[in-house]
Amino acid sequence: MSDLSDFDAPKKPWLTALVPALVIFLAAGAYWAFTSGDGDRNNLEQVGTPANSGDKLISGKSYYLYASEIELYPNNQEGKPWDRGEDGPDIKYQIKWLGNEIFESTVKDDSLLGNWSGLQIDLKWSDLLGKTLSPNEAIQAARIRYETKSSVEIVVKDSDLAKDDLAGNIEIDLKSLRVGKNSREFPKDSKNSVRNIIITVLPIDSTIDDLAQFMRE
Amino acid sequence: MTRPLILVSSLLLGIGLVSPTMTIHPKAGEITWLMEIIDPISMEPITYSVVGIILELAEMKDWFMVAVLSIFSVIFPVGKLCAFWFYSFFNQEQTKAFSILKMAKILGKFSMAEVFLLSLFLISLKTLPGGTQVQLEYGCAIYFLSVISSILSSMLIQKSRSGIVQ
Image 1: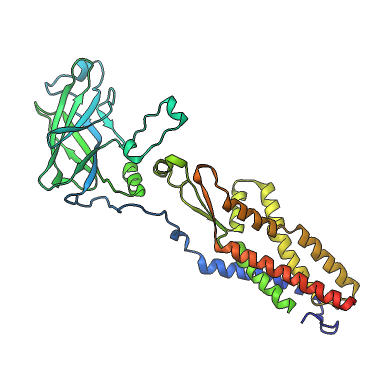
Image 2 (image 1 turned 90 degrees about the vertical axis):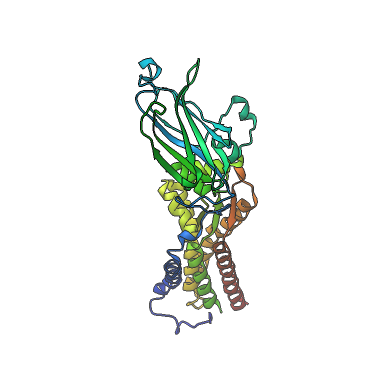
């Protein structure tokens, strides 16, 4: 086919030189048109069980449980200002399950509203030489197993050097909780100074995506 | 035989330029899971085509690399195929045909398509920091087939030329 004579040659051969360029352009355009919209196929590999916010807890399954937010009333149980009115309360909480304290949070200084992300990494200078981190080490939450008739106790305190002051002792029926954030409000009385508490529950075998999503919410 | 081969090479080059060439799977070593929580977008696998890489570099305003990649991986390979096609319409004894073939050879020498493929293979074999992996996609194979058919076209042209000279 390539041994054409001059007679066979087109009148304006330079125009034909654009044929390969045109084929390249058309092929690229056709490919792009056929495949556009497939971008969502490359999702991250999911390891673990997918979970949705609002799902009921499953009996026998293990969960992370932590208070992502605690708000206190402006006065303590005795009706007096926190820390003798000098500063706000230094909020911390403990989680008790089956009569045992299974988790204690960090202290949020001088605040009526404490937030905990559920994720914390304590790094020391020596760790720079080489530290292995696993999700279990970094997730700051109680680990519980859901059973229909069980409950957890959240003990909220104003942390003090001498003696911690109790802000509230809240019992939460696990049956009332859902995966994700669970908000509870409480009235002020002589035994309670906790206005609001948000409890976050995550399945322990959550995918990294789900954990990230819940913690960002 | 030459012209259909040039057309096939053009077709493959067109698809090869826009189809997925490589996928980068970012990893951050021991703290990969943590990075996936803190910055999930930056940890998602990214698939690039040759044109996609050029566009990404353009977004980063790396104009030198945009120019280098565009000229050597797109313009020269396209120009070479155009020159081969143009040449195929001439009687090979004509002096004009000589100059076209010469131009095609020069374009072929400056075309970085083969080097680009080789570098892709080398990157895919190398382990990048944090365990980041580069996985070659089917676009790379299509681009490779385009390069092979282009080389075959060049060989067929040279063969027909030497036949005439003899």
